[in-house]
Length: 255
Ligand code: ADP
Image (cartoon, rainbow, N blue to C red; front, top):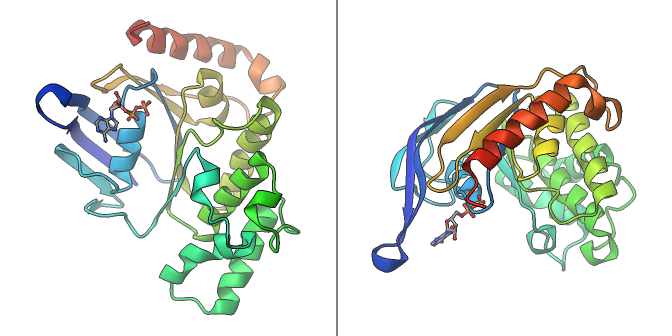
């Protein structure tokens, strides 16, 4: 689904030059839910924006379903951390979700139905006529997830998607992602700085070094499914893996 070969990215030049990514290699299989963790500022968002075709890396190659990424791939959707800036405040929730579907060959009625179905799958079937400001932060992030789901992407990228919500909502959203990935056959790459979250949600956890980022760990997570916030987190494999990921992240962190 995704092949990253010797990715390198350098921002700016001269005194403002910053080497963000250095020789990063990674491949993600179809249907996999991969979590990427790494120290703050290591280059995780730079990596994700490169995959999404939002920045042009200075070196290396990225392929999505075998196609070299030159602009945003048509079969890709992104969920950002900052839901308050990613939803249009003047559009209803249903219109926000339906908006990207204009890129697809669908009638207005089909777009409306797809938006409703996606909102239903994130537990917001009744919220379509509301406006984003009438919803809580967690609900707004659900709308962002619904918008990505309605688009039916082959690859969904999530950049710290639960970073701006409270702890309880965060757990609910983690479970929502696990639920929807079961229904929609999708590959998901989720970026987080939360070690526990990466192990709880991921099929696999990739750990990045501090800048310039490259892969320092690649661990398979084989926790029993379905996962559960209480029992999965006390499972001996979970405890073992979070310690291992923690060691890898701290071993390379500058603090
Ligand atoms: P992370 O997501 O891991 O916190 P980022 O990918 O956002 O890290 O940023 C990695 C580094 O690149 C940071 O030190 C950041 O200051 C720098 N950076 C990010 N965007 C730019 C930019 N447009 N120009 C210059 N430096 C940037």
